[in-house]
Length: 238
Image 1 (cartoon, rainbow, N blue to C red):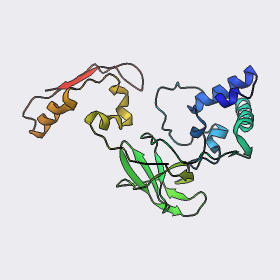
Image 2: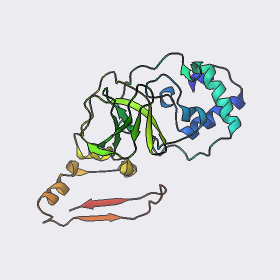
Image 3: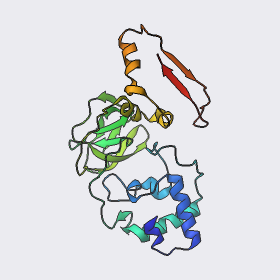
């Protein structure tokens, strides 16, 4: 939003841009560009979310703004960042930070990978080409790629189309060094780790399991978390 503020927009224009930004759940230019950092993505430009995003649940569920609001968004984004069409004036370059929540990656041989819940999957190519290569939606599990490039994609029919990708400036695939770190990679349960207290990184629980459950393991929850809302408390121990 800093770049938009520098344009000295009217209050109406600022509100329109903010409404679009909240709907898209973004706060940085890199979140609305294609994977190569060269262009504004079509879905960010038009307000069309075609595939699930990596953003967490800290954003509000915001209704989609009307067409007139997206027209203002496009005008302001053009003034702030673009040179021709949806091309940004200066390509963003290589990715700096590895984001474990990002789903899509390519490799230099033209393969497409997805990362979900800490597991890697490979999508077989349908049409290999330099621009907008096409892949199968259904993946097969695989080992982590050695040099993944962060990518953006969209789904069309029974295909996934890659809109761009680029290297990381330096990359070291994160390896969990504790049980808590491993749990943190699991998107679906991350909500219940905010107030997690675990003695010795769960050693007693792991010992009970490896000993063939000779010890009693008890899990208790108040069950109040449902459909992404509410609070919950739970405990598990021996």
